Amino acid sequence: MARTPKSNRAVKPIRPNEVGKLRENGIPDAAFEAFNELITKNFTGSSAIIKTKDVVKLMIEKGLNQNDIYDNGWLDVENVYRAAGWNVVYDKPGYNEAYDAYFEFKRRSRAD
Image (cartoon, rainbow, N blue to C red; front, top):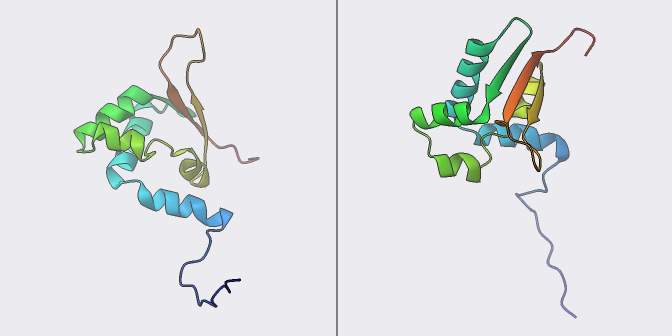
């Protein structure tokens, strides 16, 4: 029977509370710039709605590759913006529905 060698591991399993920060660090600045610009442009005083196609277009204009955007999950920003104080909802059409997928960023109330 083989024995498991002792190890002083430099790499440890990731903790659930570490995922968000590591995920955020993997998203390029250009992606956050695109979201921030569109939030600012579409903000009504309490919320902003951003169509997915619009943020992807702006990310591409900022030099990102469309395949990389989707393959690397650079649109998965909800938790990062929640941590920054927003209520974020992502909505996309279900089966037999036809509308553009979008993010809604709402100002978090003081009670949240």
